[in-house]
Length: 102
Figure 1 (cartoon, one colour):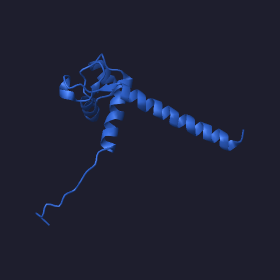
Figure 2 (tube, one colour):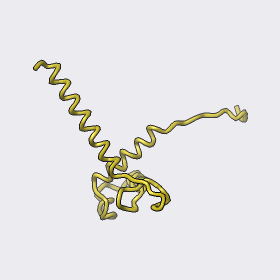
Figure 3 (spheres, helix red, strand yellow):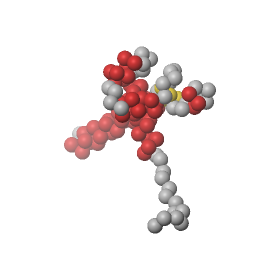
């Protein structure tokens, strides 16, 4: 087995692990119209993704969230961050010229 083959296998393994983490993250998020008005939540809870992101942005640590929300796990917090990042990444902004201003 040459060095190129080993490098290819390691590269494949890295991307496979990233894909598995991504898929696990999406398995932990759900939306139900009857729960929190259909906002994305951590599966099996009423904890919205935006609440987790907001609390972290306000300076809360993972440990603070885990203490305050016993049904939450470290993996669920990470899943919420991955989900939020993907929503922003896939967002499209369209600028429209309105004819007002300069």
